[in-house]
Length: 247
View 1 (tube, rainbow, N blue to C red):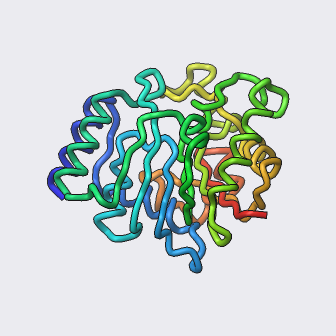
View 2: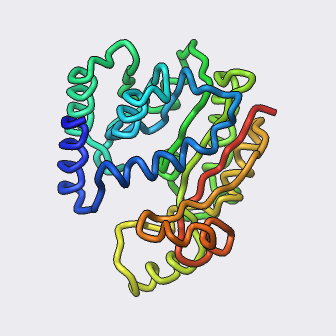
């Protein structure tokens, strides 16, 4: 996986954060472990595919059969044309052209014409870009549009399929410290939503909530037994994962 490792390291230097294959594998396992055993994840939709490193990794590991990645590649949202071109090069390098397709557009535009269905839909750290607001979501002008989008996503999810959403919590110790400039970081917690806000929207779109899991950072993995909990989300952790099925 030399080409993938090189791409990961290059992007890490560009964004000034620490990421390597081991950390990618650790985070990836967290996302996949919530996929029900009866869902083999054959056909996957990734909303906001970005760098696509996780997708390439999963395809090479044969965790997925085929993937469609959708992303407008807007630099202000975190991924730009360079990320898009690099991902195309990775797809070519690993001969994944028949298994990994890209749509350079917004998910809303894609859903207007899509005829495909999927076994699993991932929306990883992207919803706060699609529906950006500093208000609590259910009281914001974005709420109705968010519900409509999830109604459309439900229509393209296979009967036994699942929706997996990862986002960052709005409230908690880390957001409190960051908002007061007591810790460093690039996360703007004011545009994030607490997990139950997205749960409320997705249930309004016709999904059934299955579970909530807390992502324990790689550096704190030895304390996962303690931090993979509501306590962890309120203290040392700020990222969560929601799994939902069709109602």
